[in-house]
Image 1 (cartoon, rainbow, N blue to C red):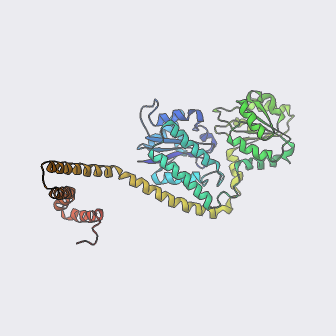
Image 2: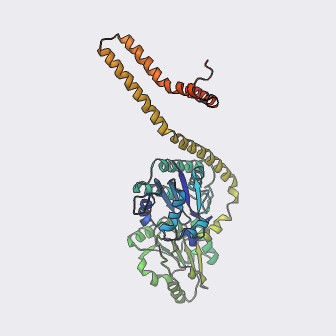
Image 3: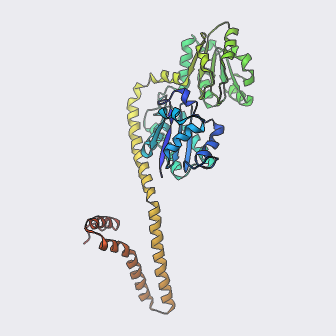
Length: 422
């Protein structure tokens, strides 16, 4: 078993790169089939694979003998030359991969230290891989251990006790632009988990108006109802946008849905009153050029990260404690992996012993059928089985050279627990 993790995240790559290698939910099954050879690719790069794709990271966890091939596949699957992605890519083998997975799930590798959303996203990644048939023994064990470690870290440390969330950071930035959220109209595009989290924080400030727009109007209505807001279809966005002071968007659209022209018309209709926008999507929902408009304040997930990082110094002791827990659990996981390497040999050894047992048992049955004394048959059975089981190690010791014999003596003594016997 060869465990590897590769990918890009907010530490190694800007959002312009991350959005180009993201995996929207609808293409994940095809991607998993492709990298494991179940799809239309030329070869099988990984025996097992799971893909974690969020606004801050795209990572592939796999059981593979071709880690470089998987890394190149990540770029080529998205139609990118590998050389464009390689400078931002990390490739983590075995112990490093396990350590990384444990840290990610525990919130130690997040833009917001200790945030909890990433654990749910990792669980979804494992479920998607299971549904696609690409989660085998190794990755199933990795993810189960990962979830267990994350729970232990959050229970035993204060890593999440005073976490500043991305959602809270969005409100903080908005309050830098407007004296009070209570006097503003807030528009949310999308109806997923991230939008719900952000809407919860904005709704707590009692904005004068709150609306959710989404491609599926039913989902928009369900979410808006939780906050006493309005709902509309995404197709109504052009006429609605000028009515709102604050826009927060997070969808799975592969292309921007808020373009420069749309915002220019909205700003003009608002008579240049300022608009605050937060784009939490990767790939981005709002065209980059929108941020260049004089009356628009546009922030991305990277910008929110800068806000939340400034208040995290007081968690250093919790991080140290969490890292110690993770180090111990990584050691246990690696021990499990190493023991799995011996499974084929153990199975062969048992099969060999079973063949010897059956052979001696057949001889004993035949002797009993001939009417021989049962006591003598049992004696011959036990002696014959003993001789056959000890033949190979005894032969190896007798035939070994001087240097090899000392090592064999040590190994046989350990295998048969002969320490202290003469």
